[in-house]
Image (cartoon, rainbow, N blue to C red; front, side, top):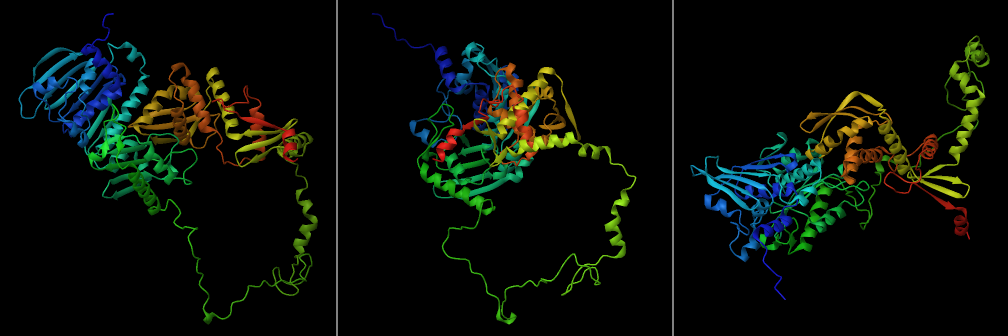
Amino acid sequence: MSDIIQLLPDSVANQIAAGEVIQRPASVVKELVENAIDAGATHIKVNIKDAGRTLIQITDNGSGMSDTDARMSFERHATSKIRSANDIFAIRTMGFRGEALASIAAIADVEMRTKEHDRDLGTFIHISGSSIITQEPVSCDSGTNLQVKNLFFNVPARRKFLKSNPAELKHIINEIQRIALANPTISISLFHNQAPVYELPGANKRIRIVSLFGKNINQNLIPIDTETSLVKLSGFIGQPKHARKTFGEQFFFVNQRFMKHPFFHRAIMQCYEKILPPETIPSYFIYFDLDPADIDVNIHPTKTEIKFENESAIWQILQASVREALGKFNIVPSIDFDQAGSVDIPMPLREYGDVHVPEIKVNPAYNPFEQSSSPKYSYGNDAGFKSAPAQRNNLTNWQSLYKGVEPAPMEQEETSTEPVQFKMEEQQTVKTSVQFKNKYILTPVKSGLMVIDQKRAHERILYERLIQVMETNEVASQQQLFPETFELNASDATLLLSILPDLKALGFDVREYGNNTFIINGTPGVLNTLSPVEIIESLLEEYKLSPANVQGKARETVAISLAQASAIPYGHTLKPIEISELIDNLFACQTPNFSPKGKKILSIMPLEDFEKLLK
């Protein structure tokens, strides 16, 4: 039998390695920007086209490279960060594996111009699919300029599985957010199709957070600053009232490197127990600074998962720091009702005399209908009220004031028999349905007791109305008397821009104002909402939870998200007439049993089950 095991060609091996490091255009941006930071750059410019499919260009003012280093940087396992295995446990730089440029060059067309600051000429290298096309001297600026074109041009299967441009752009924005937050002193700018997304000057941590997530977050931040012999913690946590339903403002950084750590996340969530709105996640931006020998960053190709040597101890320090910050800013109750001892109530001083129980003097002989000669208001044993002659005439002759005045048409309708009969029927319906815990509606039926989830019921009603509006193209937009302006972070702004055509089809009149700012001029008439900005923000949160990857289902997803964002929330008290109207509208729907996301709206408890409970 012949030998079947063979060494892979370098081009194939590089493509396999690229699959571990380069998953999408955002991976390229991450690796190249981190290389620029390691090169000592103070200003980094990122320019992308078509969400990175066509072009990813990274320009920095770092140290640059010589012609030999420029050529060696594209070899696998070629790095300037480590020399021996021991160096892996003392790493403070971003990249150190020496695989990024080799992996990128294996699946794209790459051009690099680089020059050291003390040189007159730089180096130009052109590599396509791991093959060197050109290397020659060139006149260029100091630093490095890398252009990555036609990503995955030779791996069509990988290119086919890329998401839509808005989705890929969102991933790029998320990577830039992480890098910018970890390095607030570095100036970073991001352009997409020549339009600015971020232009961030060097600043401190708080200003950088506000620049990325909008000025509204500034009043939401609670500072944290704890220093121990094991770790130094700094950063900010968010107030519970500003918590959101989706992830997006939760960041851990260790030695200026972003990381994901579910164990530490649980430590923070425990601090927020019983003070968070239901199903929400608080914001936090927490920076860990500790000895590199106490962590291991070499356990994942993207280096976002990090192991700590003293994980349990740091968990306790983190939780104590968050609790302290919440307590200092009066977010949690400062009184411990379980503490021993009692509250001392001071006794009155003797100089004020003896203390008596207050008494209320009443006149048991007082008759409010008895007429007397006393003034209008008098207090005493014979206190009473006596009407003046004119007042007595008014009491007996008040009907003469309305002689010749006919009842108004509205009053005639109210005194007619048909509306009274309708109200009686309506009242009988309302009496049989009650709200329970401001969450469920209980109504008896022939077979037992029906329980209706009020929020899901309203979601179904709004969803079918919105679908009907889209199908008939009969957009009923209610114009705002005073248009509202609101600001979003870059990620949410990109998402909103991608669904604006679908929102317009539903009756929204939202226009871009520039710098991630939008204006609401009109809202769908079927919503009857008083806070359009809250509806838009809730819509984006719901849309993140159920993104539409297929363009044909985008409008349906927007309709579902909008119905969920606009539905009656749990905890809202309904009037009897509102309960009756909700039930009537629900059973007028085509699918009254399930919400737009397929959750049960109602359930019937048979009468036999009640009888079993009482046996």
